[in-house]
Length: 131
View 1 (tube, rainbow, N blue to C red):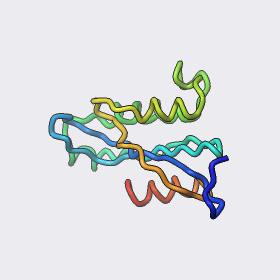
View 2 (view 1 turned 180 degrees about the vertical axis):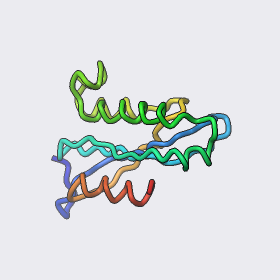
View 3 (view 1 turned 60 degrees about the vertical axis):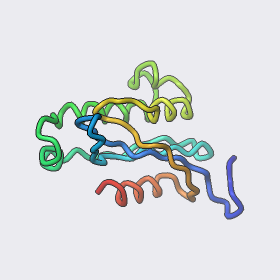
View 4 (view 1 turned 180 degrees about the horizontal axis):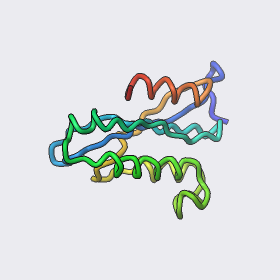
């Protein structure tokens, strides 16, 4: 197990962003992916607000964004629902989800931290960075 002196668990997270025009490097945060090896935790929280997306980028299809985010969620959950990537171990799925790509839905750089409860930390990060 990966612990620091206070008994906290090492975790890593990335912010999920919608980047309508990659060349402009403008984005809107729509979710968070959090991975904690010692708690065997890999989960994402996301929200698709069609009005907010429309105000940010009128040519974005909220249903397409939702489909992308749902695919990320299925990969986090693992198993056949997540396709070939879903069958990989937690660490490999997290690395795949947070790999740099130039698509409309992409992850930020990965940030580390320490937590007591990965699920509570995911909720807090989601509230602070997305909502």
